[in-house]
Each structure stands twice: as structure tokens, then as C-alpha cells.
Length: 223
Image (cartoon, rainbow, N blue to C red; front, top):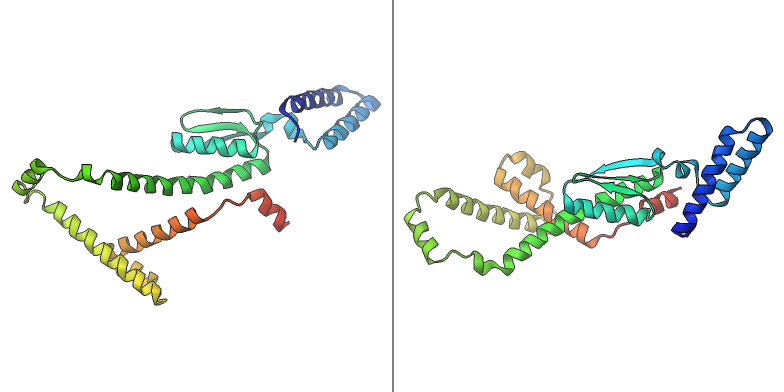
């Protein structure tokens, strides 16, 4: 790999050769063009590397966490690219191949970030579960206002039903019963909620057990 300092020298000379090729006339211009093309080939660079504005990309992000992930992805694909960031985007310079690689890699790790965020919150709530238990005063107020908390009781009952439906789904899956169409067309929102919970569990398993495969490697293998 070319070191950053040497790379800048190579780019500087390439820009000078291109300028000669642009300004030259007749035989001088032809010789400059040949020298420029030979220089690009020697160092395995192309015209868009010499003119980075051709490769300017602005990639949008949801928040600061996603921006941190995206920046690390960008620098893992092209460690020498110039970049600027705002609250909602990162501006960088990537050729087509690198840009495709960044988008594929970021898509993968953005999904993984969402899953691991959920796991972090769940672990946090479990670790501090005692702190979220209602104290004596809260219990007293709850008993006095049990009518007002009827909506809470309904939600609690619905959560129990969803858990029961989720367990039924697991039993059906163990017997190789396909209930997807039946659940979706039933119109029962609690059954559908249980089905979506099951799909979320599958997504976690896939993402947490999977490994990122380089998009460029896949292109090379398929080609």
C-alpha cells in the first residue's frame, strides 16, 4: 500500500502531467497525454483520483451513533479520504467501487447497531430491575387509583396473551407447521404482535451470528 505522504507526491505529479496534457498542442499534447496515461497505469490510479470532486459523496445518517459507525466504515474502505461531517451527514470522496462498499457495509452495521441497542436496554433494565420495582408509597397510590389504572391492567393482560401466542408459534414451528398466512390474515392484532416478536427474535439470531462479507470481494468472486 502506498503511504499517505508518497501518495500525495504521486497525485501532485499526476495533476501536473494532466495540466500539460490539457494545455499542450500538437505533438507536445500527444506526448503529454501518453505520459499521463502511462503514469496512471504505473501507480494504478485513475482520472477521478486526480480530481476528487468527481467522487464527492454525501451520506445521510439518523443520529450521532450512526454517524460514528458510518465514519469508521468509510475509513475502513478508504483510509485516506478527506471527510467533513454535520449532525445529519458525512461528506467524503469515494470512487464508485468504494462508495458501493461503504453503503453495503454501513447497511449491515446499522442493522446490527439497532439490535445491539435493544439488547443493551434490555440488559440495563434487567440489571437495575430492583430499582424499577414500585415502592410502598407507589403501591399505595396504585391501590387507591386502581380504577384509573384499568388501562394498565388491560395492557398487562394483552402482554400475557401475546406471550401465550408466541409460545404457540414456537410449538408450531417445532412441528414444521407454517402459520404465516393464517396469522397475517386473521386480523387478530395480538397474534400478529406475537408473530412480529418471533420475527424479531429470528432477526437477532441472524445478525448477531452473522459476519460482514466484503461487497467488493463478492463482486470479484461473482465476476
